[in-house]
Length: 525
Image 1 (cartoon, rainbow, N blue to C red):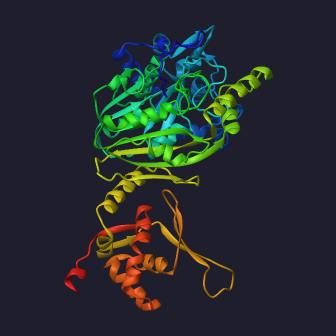
Image 2 (cartoon, helix red, strand yellow; image 1 turned 90 degrees about the vertical axis):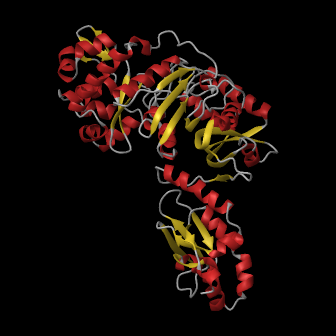
Image 3 (cartoon, rainbow, N blue to C red; image 1 turned 90 degrees about the horizontal axis):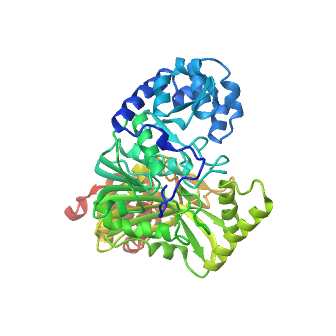
């Protein structure tokens, strides 16, 4: 994440600049360190094997005691876990057996501590989508959010992998592109993913420390370097356009900008609104922009209409609200994140009061969190879908996101007559459930349910269930409805007239997939 104003690292916070700034030397050093880490099985799979599932999961929650107990051996992997993940000093001889010690000391990955050495940064194994062994570099103790968070740390702190990072990586469309922009790169996780499928990757951040960490993450992961630029929002890439824009911005709605990675420095949800509204001019035709965001639920205002006003001209949009918190829950979450719940109770109460006063002044009753995806279509009638979906989903969803916009294109170019003339297949992951009292002759209702992707469920009537059940791409929708009309003794013209709206909903939500234009209607067969 990056903020909208330049900051200075807090005194006493370890500076990433202590690591070598010479790009060529740093790349060579990172390559040799990477080889040592891989030789010791310091990977996501290697950690799981060493620690066991409970300790591995506890470490992801920033709980270190189980991992400390599991790394009491003297092997290279034990040493690396203690150094880089548990932030414990180790004997210099042990470190030398596990990695190129002198080079790591010279380049600043480690520092001497008497006869021991300790790490200056957190280096966390991170498994790529195709099994790649990647490493994310962040400030010590800041590899994940949650209970560890940034408690007690300076405003320029750089976090590593957290739930928001992996969520955004999972929903991003991964088609090959010429150019990608990671806006507010932080430790470089999104840029690392983009490097797999983008010819050119640009990564920006207002925090120069974050840019340095991003460079280290890419180098240590063996990825191609990115074009790293310092600045706020789209200022570093003025007049440039991209095929893909991703951002996990500092979206927290707070009464003051205290932490660069989370507080954007604008009032309310203005930062997210500005980011979304300006993205349209930075996208190439057909390009995607994907963000995580928070938005206000304001008294007397429809939250969906608020978000609809953010969508830039020329763009289709799919906005999914995943969670809503009332203002007290929201304030408490981020007060814990900054460590304000620890220590002075009076200071905690005062800051809590500041948050509530800010929300009251803005008429904010709750805060929503979710995903925003834009696609540059330049359509005369843009497709804007805004929905609430708090239910479990199956990541990765990048292909689901891409398919959603393909379906919107299809629906936009097919009127009701064209729908009835086309053929459809039932999506392969869809199953039918019949709900009713045990022993009843007929179900009370029928539900179609997706077992993958968004895992949607929708109730359908007898016609809808029958229609979905025979959609195998053979007959046109109109012919299927004619057959159903005959079975239920209904006028086929009336059934054809009333069905397209329900058919559009099943297509929009991915239950039905177009199979191609049917010719039998026009031929009279």
